[in-house]
Image (cartoon, rainbow, N blue to C red; front, side):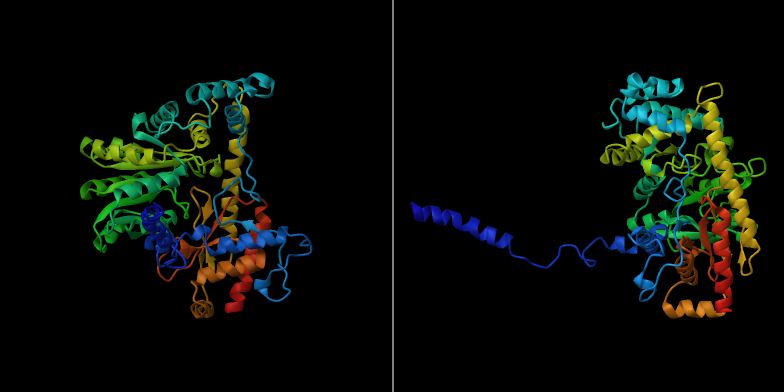
Length: 511
């Protein structure tokens, strides 16, 4: 009997022995992971940001009051600055930038997260914040529960109303998807729309999300260049030139309006020409409109949505161009980046394709509920006559005016520097000055194996603590060099003075 049991157990013992035999040292190596990942680049959070974070941690270390030490600068070297200025990313509420959150937002969100406050601390909140929180609580229930995969229907209805009031044309809540920020929506649509080898037209310069996502899905970016000397404008001829030179069939076209990193705002004529080109060529149009409320000269350069212009055209075009537009709570005057809220709207997308978009949205179950509440507050702010309107209007106007004045100030100062020129920003949160690199600086950059503007940005960080992003991370005309800096930094005079001083020293060093 024992022999029979031993014989029966033998295959199990052998299987266990095989299962514990180590075939190789690691399952995950750079040779075995998805090769598409190795092609992904994201300059906004790349080498410069990592180095800036290391400096920031060094400055926080005990005993750094007299200047933190950093071995990368040499033995016993100390940092020549007492703080890191994060001018590399549009993250308004982060420490050091400290944009004040909108009070009404935080009140409603607090009440939604802890509904008991509605009864126990009602005197601490204005009645319209309580009313909004009650309505959201009735619609959502606990903020810890999943919602519909498209997002809460009541909030999507409000988004539809917002779009209709903005554009003058109706929107269907069933065509609206709430997302974990606009970035998640962009990645979802690009991942569904594009097959390996498909071409996607992207503006140069562009936000690196697009090239990163295209690399990951195996699609091919097809650049079209914005006209720097004409306030980063674009026209049909720029797109046709890119299409004619493309090596891949063009499936989609990305527009960022207002522009990131350029701050340019498209005219109605430019928008119409893009729409008509997409209609003639059967191209999917993706409109990134997350900076639509960051407009500095609305009388002369207003924001106009792609959907509005599309619906104003003749029926053949208005009902024929496939459009997906994106918006976010991270930008504008809210700056709620960490809350991860946004939406996209489908226009003229075939029903069977829309079913697949819903299927892929359902895989991730639902967008963050706190972000969905943020979208509700974005599209339905306090109205005149309501208790919170005066405070909301004062807070949002101050944020907008500060951004506008800083942008204008930086533009003026940058243009006064030798070897630097800068187009005025018409919107968004950034400036994208051009650097006229001395020949010796170009030679040195080639010697160390870095783009010249990356070398410039790294030296700027090392000398001043200011973290900016090199233009090469966004794409630029060959032979040109740029720097993207945000207009979010308080104390802009000191911030710009440091850039000016560094720039003059850099140019003199490499002259």
